[in-house]
Length: 101
Image (cartoon, rainbow, N blue to C red):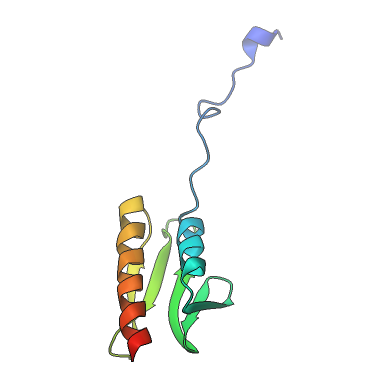
């Protein structure tokens, strides 16, 4: 066997996929009114506000955000950068409204 017979994997130059939760978590930690009570679980004034859920198998990363009405949560996909931005914008909007109460 020679060195010419060894083939590197086709994706050896492909960078690993970015962790969608890392960017969102970093942004949430920067919001002073939100506190991280557990890993990837954030509270606002002691009440559950958001939960970030990592991808597992075929299920993509997602987040659950408290509704303004106070009952239940709304699910958001975090698969793309646009999804993450949409979620962060909505979370900041809701944090502002709920923080003013």
